[in-house]
Length: 366
Picture 1 (tube, rainbow, N blue to C red):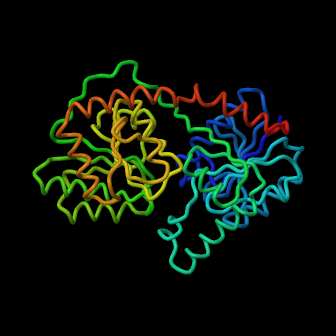
Picture 2: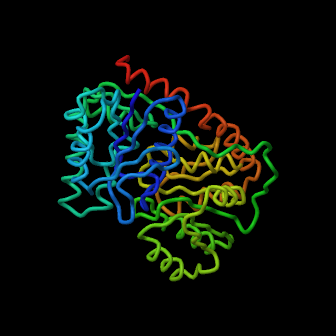
Picture 3: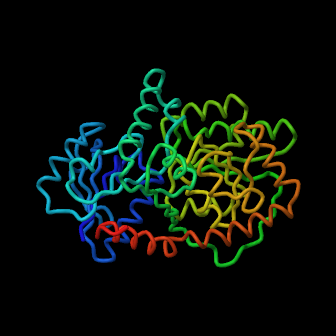
């Protein structure tokens, strides 16, 4: 069978993130099952119009908005696809109305308040309205997501069929849970695109909050993005130059080493589809402290595999970090439960179910 993924970014786009990593996982698995798989994405400076990325043919045309027209023109010259996957990131591709074949919508999260972070009023208001309207227009299109919270939001907006398939990770779970006492300085890590909605500055402020209470902590920030300069300056202004390290993007093996060394992963995003790096950290024997937001309350189970803060503030983050440090027995319990649970989210467990469902959709079943 032939599958087409429509996604604004591809794995080599400088702005690629977790969405592209999981997308690549699904498409690679379909290719390994013998299917013909294509990925259509926006063009970006330095990106070839067409190339093969780790075995996946990638086509790049146009930019925001324009790429929808480019996709239609390219699509007309191709052999028939059995299934088109219309991946939404705030804006859809409107594929059900031009692809002429079976189509599913793939969504990581309902943006909602994220529009307010990236755009000023009235653009943010228009974005929210457009998103709600899009989901209503797509109400008869099968949706696919990883989060029960996202499923509930879609259903509240009229979407009739939503399939939940959890994200998977490539990270191999440690064969044994090595000893790791939580002690001073507390080693913290954040793995994120450095964008406003990720609120990495809350992690930096939590380190300052801990310092003011005589608790020494070190924070490693892995990732890149346009807020890096602002947040570097914040760390300097708070006198945390020796306590906060920005590593930039790291290779997967390097990232795993950092996750393994840390006591806790912090995740302070405004909203997530799931929180992929939480499970990656768990696989390395590192529990997480996360904000009580969509997605993250599913990837971290409060007081079982980590802690969910009481509020979305640096102070609440600091309190949860302190709670882990003050009760080492709880910390060790979180570590073990998180490590054991992470094994159930490895790609080897997730991909067969995902591919079975996509193949069924391509055959017109379900």
